[in-house]
Image (cartoon, rainbow, N blue to C red):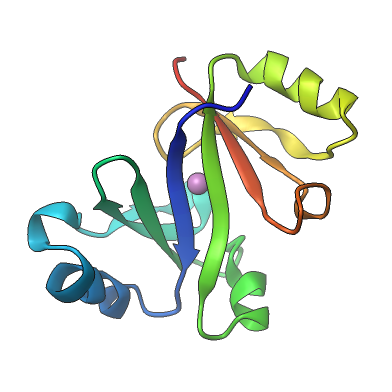
Length: 136
Ligand code: CO
């Protein structure tokens, strides 16, 4: 059911330093976006285009950030979630629920303007999974 890996999200306390690590070292300036504040998601994001997928470097924004607790447990930052594309999010939710995988909350509009939902990491081998519908 899941399709292409849309992005790998990495949480960091210092977005400027993380972006510079890709700009100057691991990637190149053309592959690294400027910071994009997403107040409705409680994060500021830098996108790193790696050709077949992208990285989303996430820094907390505001005091209700969903990644604040993750960074308390992982002060050096780390892998936060994987996002896979699905053609039909409603159908995907029904399928994963039938397989006993818990869905966290209701679908909402994600960072790319498309509906997304998160799956419980305890039901996904310890990895937080995001499903993103490929078209609205
Ligand atoms: Co994501």
